[in-house]
Amino acid sequence: MAPVGDGGRSPSDGIPDGDPDIRLSRDDRDDFRDELATVYTTEAAASTVLNQIDFPLAYRPALQGSNPEQWWSQIFSDLNAGIMAGGPYRRLLRTARRRFPGNAVFQRLATVYLDNQHVDAGNLDDGTSVSATENGLEPAEVEVGSAQSCHVIVRAGSEPERRHAWEILANLGLEPHEFWSTTDTVSYRVNDENTERVRERLEETDLGWTVVPAGEPDYVFQTLYARGPDGRQVRLNDTPAQQTVGNVAASVMEEYPPAYTDPARSVVVDEVQDDGSGRRLNGDDTLHGAGLHNGSRMRIGGDASDAWITTATRMSKIFLCHASQDKAQVRDLYQRLRSDGFEVWLDTEDLLPGHDWDLKIRQAIRTSRTVLVCLSSTSSNKKGYVQKEIKHALDVADEQPEGSIFLIPVRLEHCEVPDRLRKWHWVDLFEESGYVKLIRALRS
Image (cartoon, rainbow, N blue to C red):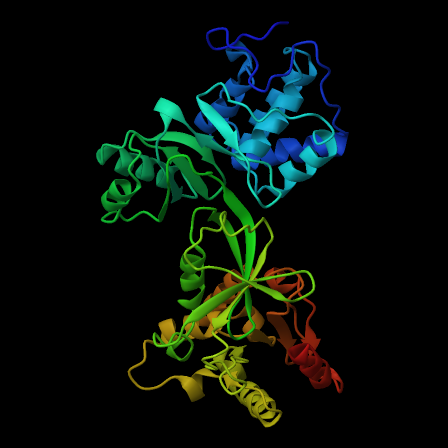
């Protein structure tokens, strides 16, 4: 069946109707569908890419009442049924890679199925064109000509948040149109090409935003890693490519106490190379301009000439999460760890009169290298603040790169380990070799 296009447009990627389509393996087709459901979560966002490949309007299901996975499964089912000619899977993959050059799944599939084909980076049929990058990624999509305008990337992880963001942009007179979306982020095309003017309007809003200047690539890095001055790594998700290196460094350094953020000291950022060496980055460059890619690792710290980060100031703090009923055993552990040279945070030792204790505890968890969750038959079933501490530790643990040791369940006696902690291998402190194993983990 011939495609029902929008006004009889020709295919956007220059592939003739008779050109054979790519043949995705079953696993790759499932990966492609699932990733599309992750980045195109609304009907408006999905329509952008479906319009570009001329998917028939009459066959498009309604997203309302179904989840994105079901919706895209129906789209793929229709493609498999042959409702379109002209290599729809090829065009869909090419379009997805152009819009999300930092997406690891799209890049992998494109490398396997597209890179042996000639790709003409010409004009797209929605008034956009492709410009080459210098970091080996597929060119990112930009706007040109009369359609040229800024984009605004907003943090919004739910439909109410997206409606709120859209309403704010609309009330500012920016006439927002959704360009793409991920689970936690959405990009809107606005009606103004003046970057500074758009930023000035957004300054007084409550949105977390990044302005993409007209004509610049608009995409996010799904995952970046940043190692702070204490050696602790954090994972950054959905980071706009148009954020500057300096802004990313500042957001990481906000989590550190004043000893690490002396305004008289300069902060430098290196991209960590495969051999462990560093490539110095310019803080004023955007992440895209700096040549970073999805999965890049950065090292953030003080200029070596300042020598402001020394062994004495490196944060090796260990946070002891425990129930008050286990205080005696936990205090013994505290003293033992300190005698072995570790810096340990314990509420009864580190909280001072007048401190906002809830804030201080959350800060201590976030700035610790390791959190030891001390468990007993009492604490495992106890309701109260200890459960809140564990929840906050789990949230921070989710930000750590795979393979790092941040959270360690420590059994003080025979007891059940809560389900939400069972993914981590625990240590039994009551066994003869338990403490030795714990020290090995802390020093690894």
